[in-house]
Length: 467
Image (cartoon, rainbow, N blue to C red; front, side):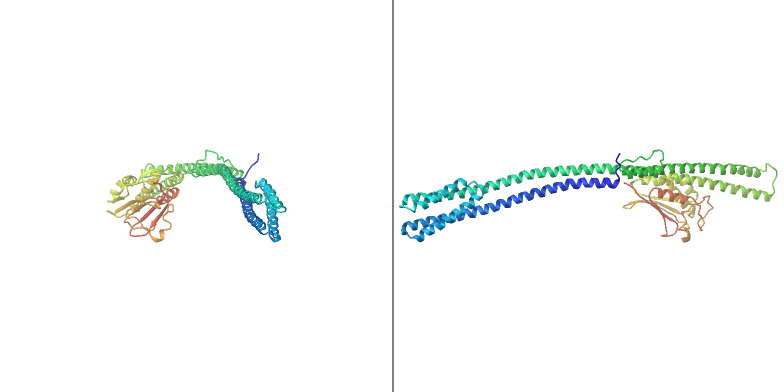
């Protein structure tokens, strides 16, 4: 079986198109050249015929004048003039006979015989009536030759126009067939080449969405098929890596949580003084152990949660969502947290919709609000805003707290990073909230940034959207 590559297919397709269109153009050029040659030839014949007939008419006039002068004077000079005019006229007759396409042959023969008879009439006794009849016949023949010549020119022009019209229709049909063939060739080439490209695109989208169950199958050119095989190998490799990752997370969760649970239960038993009474110093040590065990358990849960969210971030489920209700729901979810600090959350959003993943955007808004509430002063205000523009959807969260130190701005989105500035009240966060925000925003094709345009922290999320 012949395997054709992408380049060979493109070359073959363009070659077919060029041959079809080039053949039609060449046919048109050849037809125009042939018609132009016929037109030039016909024009030359018409000019030559008209000039010869006109000159023959002039020689006929000379013959008539010389004959009448000879009849009156009977001098040899006038007879010589007659003979010279007759010789020139006969030469013109021969020239007209050479133009065989013009139907003048019978008239030319009759003109020659009449002229010769006229010359013979001058040799013997002159009969004026007979001479007048033959001169009139010559004039009549010349008039008929001019008329036939004009008719031949008109007929030739009509034939040329008819042939031009027929060739025009034929050329138009050939051009339509050539364009149709070129269009079919382009469509066939497009289908043959675009279909595997679309299959590759779908395969890449599936891989990006972590859907590794369906094999990658690509048809078309041999090089694109080979690329499809490479993608299928990549799919299998990614499926193995994803399976290893999930297995590792399960093992880490089990290996860490099992001894941590036992340690937590042991600390609880010590705190309840089940083994025996504890001294004041021992109770302080047990409290330190209990606090650190709880913190370690929280860190492990946050780590597993962050890994799970990073995996789920690649599974986007976009749909049209109203912006104002989405922000109001996010504010309502943190209402008790905000009321405990005496904070007011102001929502600013247009009555518009945007195509986005509402669950992931809700997680982004919740983490930004949680961070803003923790760092806001008592009785402060938090602004949660959304706006639509030509560049996309913008979400903003601004508080009136201590803000972010300039030296922490470049690392504030790193996992487990705690900035230098402390919140007004102790918080239980582990420093993964903003890193989760960055993961989700990047997965949705956007970017998150910290704007240093005033007191407090001002986070801005830019997302692409489809209205």
